[in-house]
Length: 138
Image 1 (cartoon, one colour):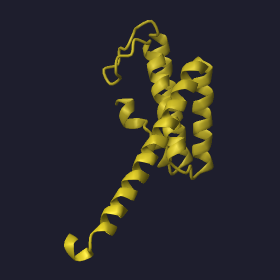
Image 2: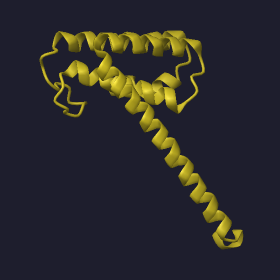
Image 3: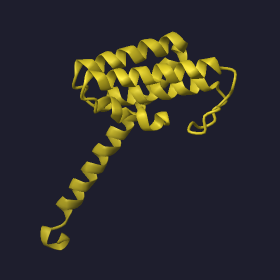
């Protein structure tokens, strides 16, 4: 099973039990451990784009970006999700804080850009509907 199916921003926000949140953290730990054992191999995972970094850094950056995106995109509804995110942040910072922090901020920025784009689209849609009589649109 590829981690792109198991761990994505939506996965964190849709957790509905502490067991699910624990599974996510355990999965990241397992994948990271495996990648750290092979840390001199560069971009061995076909799921990840080649960035020239060792696979464990590519993975930790992807998790950080996804976590930052999830945190900025939605309201974390449960304490157990917040605890899972805290565990991921600590784990990522322990592995390589600069790469974790940089990718986490990229995820936050990406979420803000998407939100701004959604808001602009909604404003344009409202302007469009206001500029035409309803009878012309139906």
